[in-house]
Length: 230
Image: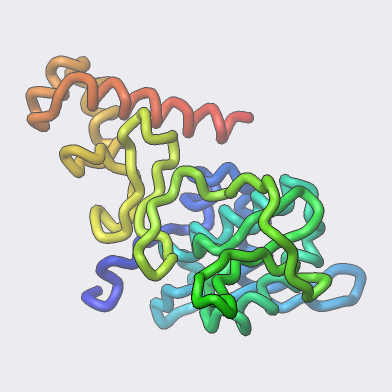
């Protein structure tokens, strides 16, 4: 298990619950599928390989699925997302290119942020339209990854799935990437379950966390349940 430390571990069902993406869609994307006699390969190779036939996602896979689904929700076709992944993988030299902080969308096209040095030596940021293969000036395009913390290399480090207000974080280096209270690192499902048995005050005392942490954990876990029921 040593090689798995820091990756995060999620079954397709766990990933789907966190992302509000159907498990079947995640499985199709990472295993490949056939429609009307035409085969579509996996969009990318999962970063976790347990040596058997089980499909397990790592944190980068989780973030990649999140971005791919966000593009489709914004109106970009699945075929264009597949093409964007292929182009971006070559441009960035990464197996999980969508989950970097280099992407933007306007609901129709997908853009890759490119940093160039001009004749005057000044670095400029431009947007490369992945489908027209031409540079465009940066417009008013909202970033998809508003709740992700990135490292200096542009790769995702942390995800705040309920927004930063809840102080619940998904950190692949802690608790195998399960949602935790950011301050204490106690999994939210543990705090919520303890509150059901002992009440909020009892749970806070048992795990030596503020009562506010227990309340936020309950709110987050309740939201996950509502997502599954929706």
